[in-house]
Length: 434
Image 1 (cartoon, rainbow, N blue to C red):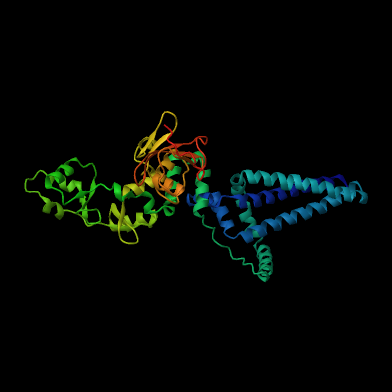
Image 2: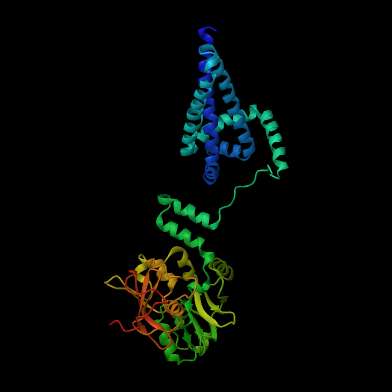
């Protein structure tokens, strides 16, 4: 064998190893593509993305094509390398040449190209998709035959070869995607997306204004008192009732009453005439459903009722939207109701403060799947109405009772330091702390 065939075989061998590297990198890159980003780019008429998406619509054919080409060039490279070995070294060098070729193929045709493709799938897959598309047309009969044989064998094991749609993301998986987006999505926007994803996990009970805190107008009061209340009211919509909140007559829109107050003939009967019918919602309705219900009923305020039909609270569309976009303030921590930061780092909290609100504002991590208020949490934990000075722990939060009423806790001090008191259940220090 003269020098020309040897040089030709060396060139062919290098070309075959390069082709093997191409098929290996193409396989890894195509399978590593982000399907959602690929669909997004394809919808924006990115040519490489559209070619790749078309190939991935039938992954069995794509894999068959790549493996067909990869195995063919690898086997042909082994044959050529064996001929070179016989010509240059003899039969004694076949075993050593096998080890050398294995190392070369692993490094230059497998590990390196696949690593590069895994790190930069789009840079590899989009250009590769053009040649893969051409090869798919040229080698389609062989690919089709290979797929038919493979699919029949898979069918014997109960495996379907029919391509299925991309698995939809679950809520928790979508949360992870949003979380991992990093700087691509601003922090405020991520919080809003998390709020939307959590709507189904939160009920009306979690965000409602408790019954005892509902601001309303008692229509049985003297008209002078009602008129004064109307003139000083800061709410847009106000519940109106007779005697107690259980006897709601309707909801007053303050924009309708402002002009009428100037008229001397305006009285209680006129006020009743402009009330909107009350809208009631169950206590356990999740926020996503309630948002749709507000939209369907064209309402912005609803009375929350329990299983017995008794009014237990009030919820507004604004309360619900705050779960998504946060408090309607520039710094929500400053405006959290009934929470007063102290100079020593502790927080004086009213017993009626909503646990979810202060958790979101200050990151306390207090349990919110049970009682909704600090008072409820304390009483459930201690199984008693504690006296002033009682201290205990809830997780990493130290709770100190500052002021109590006959039936409830009026004020408590929350401290994030875990060194002030024993854990809940070990609340032995019931003496006033001064």
